[in-house]
Length: 289
Ligand SMILES: [Zn+2]
Image 1 (cartoon, helix red, strand yellow):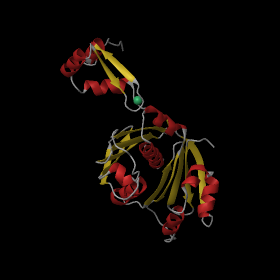
Image 2 (cartoon, helix red, strand yellow):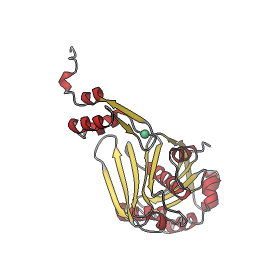
Image 3 (cartoon, rainbow, N blue to C red):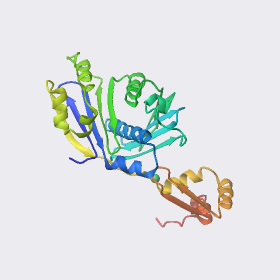
Image 4 (spheres, rainbow, N blue to C red):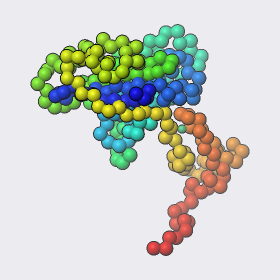
């Protein structure tokens, strides 16, 4: 079993489904990009796990972005995943804070949770709810209850080495067994962090739900990969306008360096590059039909 994976399961024959996720290298790669206090890094691990769990349930091609914006020492948690299993994440935090109280509410304070779906083709969709509950898992449960009306349970955990999680969700549809949801969510709530992190999925599901019929599907891989590119940086620069860019370049010794905050890749644009961003398309050589 690959150490970075997402794996779906389904309670047959019902509309209740689940996902299991475990991250090691992908999480380590994100931690290695910045000096995060341990509780902040672990929150990022939980957010990466959560966004991977949710991306696996999306029906369209694209990316899902989870953001937590708060007034506590951790002002931003952002994690992004696409359907190729590529993950990236970043946190903004107060470097002066002591981080002695590692409770969710002490770290994030009051704020909001945003989920953005960016399809490869089509309209962007964003849902926003206030931060509720005493964990990222409960804040996400509240989001699905408020925003999607889909009963959803999250269990998330992270250590210095790994992050892991499970999500259960009832899809709209006929369900003869009305007790199933309260029954499986109660059982899921008994899972220990150590089990989420280390027990093989088949074994974990058997331990929790051995009286139910659970079908486990094939796992797919997850990895850290930043979606930044020179082209995306160029588009972002172009939106600022030529005059502004000429001024910035003049202040910075003739070039503009765009530093990706997720992966530290630097894209440099010298004055020729900057002028070319604004070349009309008709300046391109004519193609002979
Ligand atoms: Zn990047």
